[in-house]
Amino acid sequence: MAQRGALLPPLLANSLLPSAAGAAPLVVLSDSLLQPGFLLLREIISTTLDRTDPLLLISLEQTPSRLIPSAHRSSPLISHVDGISAPPFASTSSTPLPAGLVDIHAEHGMQQLEKAVLEAIKQKKSEGKKLLVVLDSVDALAEKGVHAVFSLVKKVLKALEGGPSGSRLVVLHHTHFPSPPSSSLSPSEPLLLPTLLSPNLSPSTLHLTLHPSALLETLSSNYGLSIPLHPTQSNPLDLRLTFFLESFTSRSWGDPFTRPKSSTEEDERVPLDLGGRESGDGGGCVVEWSVRGVSNVPTLPAGAVVGRKPEQTKRILSRGLEGLRRTASGVEPASLEQVLDKRKMSSVTLPLPTPSGTPTTSTAPITAPSRPSVDPNPTSLLPFNLSLTTSQAAARETVPLPFVPTGGVVVPGGGIDYSPDGGDDMDDDDPDEDLEV
Image (cartoon, rainbow, N blue to C red):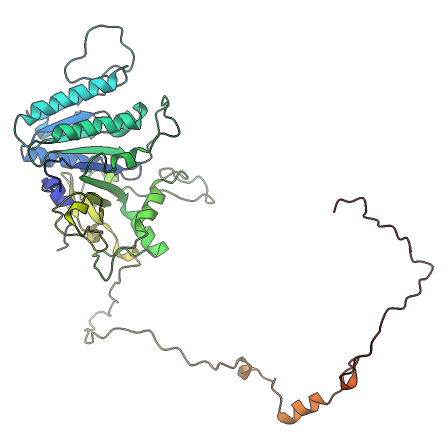
């Protein structure tokens, strides 16, 4: 049986503990147009409600009916701050919005959102249970500026401190999500993702990035990157893999969804395994994760960077790859072997097929056949002889060469005697003097 990953099972079970006492970990879930993170976010919510832990959902993009399973939609464990149901126009009515409903596009929309969220956290903390706060998504607040998003997340994490151990904030982030048309962000505005992953925001951070399985198979088969299905110290992951994945995710060319119109156009479509199948098992993707400030990651993959001292945990990152497989009821953690095709991986050695009915009696490694010895002298294969005998070489030295003085004496002088005829042009003027050369 294939072994599941080291991070996703304890993440779904909410058993990862921050190194700093009393701190609430920040979980950043990054997806893209090629690999949506909707199902994984839904699974985190579902497993939390199955444990009867309270949930605070800040919906700025998806409606609660899509994120919350039908069996839990009427649960008293759920509190909701709605930022998408407000009218998309400036209302002239003086009637305040219902409780939990916030118009983030209003003049003081961010202040109203912060007030509603902090009040809901204060109420839920009084229940004495592990609280899960979900922000879907930070990209909906991008037009307010990165500093406004930083302030909101910082205040939420501060409000979760001192509560029951296991409370956490999960933030959904879309990689290279298009900015709103009305966005007034300046070019010098800091990037959103580096701000969310900054140690100044949270000493304990988990970053999950979803990638299509076909992408890693392509990097292994066509570019020769070492992506072993079971990394070890002697067979680690390629150190360039993270940069390859970042480069592909941030590409601004091509259309991954449209079929080419002609045979001369390149087909850049990528299969969406996890989100592309409506039902049944088998769809999967690869989750790239990095962890900082978590003290009880069960096992670290080969090549992970580990701090030598406990106080260094805030600044040291541990990285790894795991699989995520879709099931009929949602998603579940899986090994890389379950989501990657071995036949498309150059770093996986497949056993040689044996003829049917022929038992395998030898376990000695198969070596390549030896190549025939090659004569280092290339003239040995010619039909004629290029070499000289001793007598032939001596006779060649005695042959007098024309225009070469004998005895090594060089006659001084020399020159060219030329008598012009009637057809010669003896004009001394330079015909190219008007050219600027």
